[in-house]
Length: 318
Image 1 (cartoon, rainbow, N blue to C red):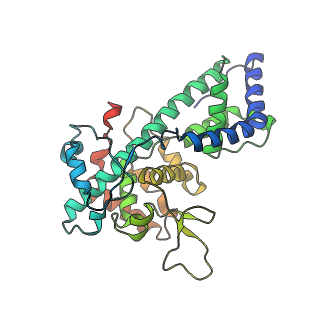
Image 2: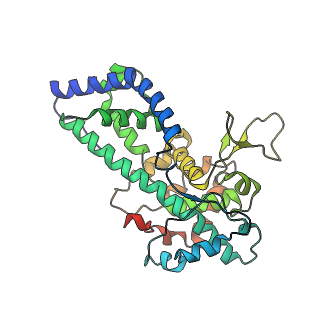
Image 3: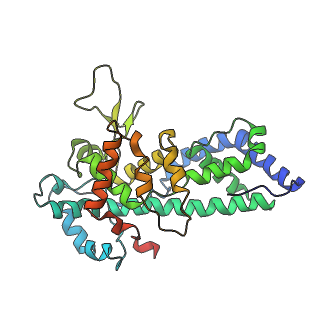
């Protein structure tokens, strides 16, 4: 997407400086940055104010009191109120009416999905500006260097050494740009519905495990009741819904199993409405069900008319 201009000393100097920052100053800065983040809680995801649904507090009433109108949202006649629940509503396990249950499920997931996408869009625009500066050989600020280092680590873009960075800078930044992108709301909603049993599974209700992600390391994890003998994986759980969504999106954006998804997504420009259908076709590796899983996701999108949410935007985004 971004091709190198004619070789010049200014550009080489800038690239060399970035490389030094990345390989020498980067790790030290990242360690300090992570410490500051954990103390200040000032990342975009952590700054979201979550509503704790305690016993006797009903999510449906909270949504209604904040003007959450699903019919108008589907018609793109109103924006989505920024209502973020810490956990999924308990009503999801008790409601018998499937229409009401589905509306409540979508209402609980749509704001965090849109919020994560908004944050990615902002990062993507910032990255494009930095790429343009590097391409033109103009000054890039020190905070921008550090930010770029952070994003290369976050999106797991591999760089072997200084020489590799300088030699492949265009490919490296293009790879980062390909990974730093949104997931269509209809796809995120459909997979959450499938993986969480429409929000009623034990993992979803107790651990915000909405997307069936596995973990083998330390941290929050729930042992599956039917885990095969000899297996050590656990179901990854989260403090709140938006962190679960953020992890799911990062998984699709970085794991090698979803390389084809990212390639299909690059067919859409930033100013285009992204169609989830070609992305769904690439998800055979998401589940052991393979093609059957793909068909299930496509069916959920079609039956529930989730394409209605392609243009959905948060109130703060308008």
